[in-house]
Length: 110
Image (cartoon, rainbow, N blue to C red; front, side):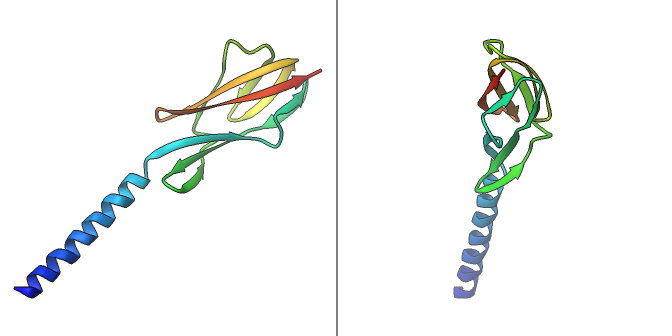
């Protein structure tokens, strides 16, 4: 009987550890970063999107949707995190992936 109890405890511990690792695989946050928060008009800057899966950071730059918000005062083109600055002003960027998002602001200088 004692052996059966120990076996059940070990199996329960394994099941619990598997459940903990399953929840850590879910995207909990996106962090947008770059070398600087400003860029000169006519130049480019590479932004990066890091997804946090539990405590594990993963580069998801090419997977996220990059959107320039309409309240931006500057203009640019953005594809997979590469910002091509066009007209000076503030560029507000929304990054979205699997229902999780983050925002970033880039100043485009003359």
